[in-house]
Length: 86
Image (cartoon, rainbow, N blue to C red; front, side, top):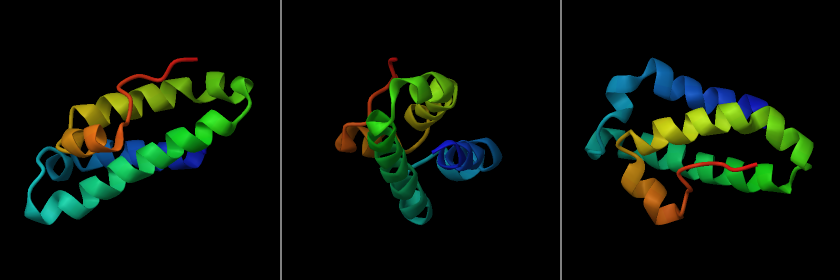
């Protein structure tokens, strides 16, 4: 789970021009990011709460980046929360 979160965060960190707007060429990437974030959150919820404490910072960063990117409408459709609470 930690690796998944790290990889998703790296995309937002290293490709800001690709994730800033939702338009033709970037739509598949943004759809993938929103879906993987949604899936990662669902998987995290199944983990013991001790792991939640370790992953909270990475998840919060990912959610903040996702909601500030062009993927925000896609995240809204999937029901991705804006924050992760422990």
